[in-house]
Length: 59
View 1: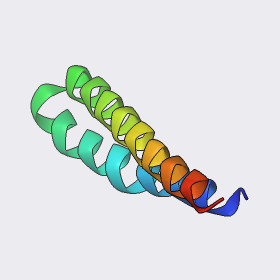
View 2: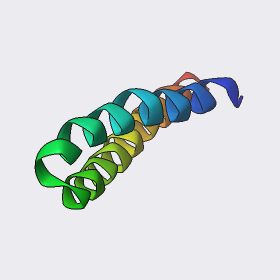
View 3: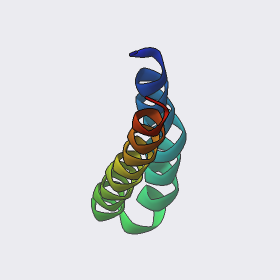
């Protein structure tokens, strides 16, 4: 089952990382972009943990 994890990965990069980086780059520059990347990576990890916990509970 790789479709749902792939969609989580793609969606978090395009919807969270790029939009947050764009918003923070104008005010904070490169530090804002790095912060956006760290926030997105943390949120993506939480989404995967949530997905795995639900997926493993079903089996």
